[in-house]
Image (cartoon, rainbow, N blue to C red):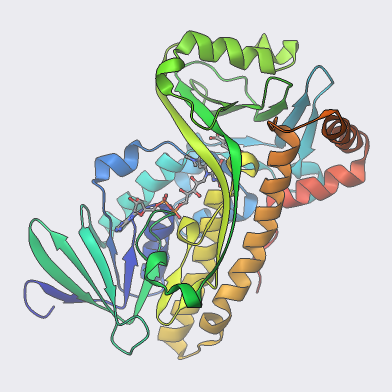
Length: 397
Ligand code: RFL
Ligand code: PHB
């Protein structure tokens, strides 16, 4: 501490979402000090409903980090997710059979709550409602972060900055355009999602129907999560619960639709779909992780899992630097993280194309997609390849 308004830490972490909080916790376990600066209030962060499906590697990492108890108590362990196609018989992307490991449905909100709990237990410093965060001297020897809290300007001096502030954050924007390459695909539709306190169908089921994509998912035995493909400019006002349920049921094969229990929604939101990658994920002493560096459409359940694998690589690199003076992992962080990122970008782009109805889909496109589904349905080899990617490739040594 150097006076009330100026502090020092080893790693300044911008963003208190899952990436920032997990990084802070793992660094703490490795004996490294960090401060998390979060723009929103705690209540706001914990109100956001997002991811629901964890890869086996993410499950192991959370357990190893001592934050797996709640997941093991409340999470829904399943052998993989189903793909349903019009009225054809659905098939299971069987990660248990092909990769030896099940998937776990567990809400991002619960994981975030758990991470806040352990950071508080361990006296970790998280500054909520930190406004106007600014990054300075990123390429010099003494980086610092300036922010406003309760009307006062404060400075955080540090050795490294971790940009974990999501797609709309400030970190990526601090990198000059000449030093960053970006890749982007916007999709001509969004996902309209609802949460309802009704018993779920019991499985994660992706459905392709000529009316559009639909997804049945869950959080616990009395909490269901459903999504439907909607127009990119759709308005929530046009989607009262009754209309949502009616549309949802039409998009699943009848034997699945019959199992859907409807009820009032407790949350309803629309998310745009986008693929985006920024390269490299490092600029000087700033390292990007999670949605700050890349976005995938949710059709492969990859976003949170990628945030977790980025953080695994980054904490290992920072701990090797501080504890052993070894910078090899810091130097290779961006390349290593991006290899996994591009694998997930490809899978979610491909699943999005296969399972959604695009405005310019013609009969040729439809035949190709149907043939692709039939091949997947019939071929154990094709199913094994999909299961391997859905379960997530192992972290690199
Ligand atoms: P987050 O969660 O966006 O957190 C970033 C945090 O940074 C804060 N922030 C700032 N703080 C300080 N100063 C600033 N200037 C700041 N600007 C922003 C924000 O307030 C926020 O708290 O990013 P993070 O940590 O990288 O985590 C990424 C995940 O949230 C995201 O990838 C997933 O939710 C994506 N996703 C899914 N991922 C999966 O792995 N499995 C799924 O099943 C899954 N389903 C989904 C999803 C995302 C969805 N939406 C809403 C796009 C389903 C949906 C519908
Ligand atoms: C969810 O449960 O919210 C969920 C499940 C699978 C996905 C995306 C979201 O691919």
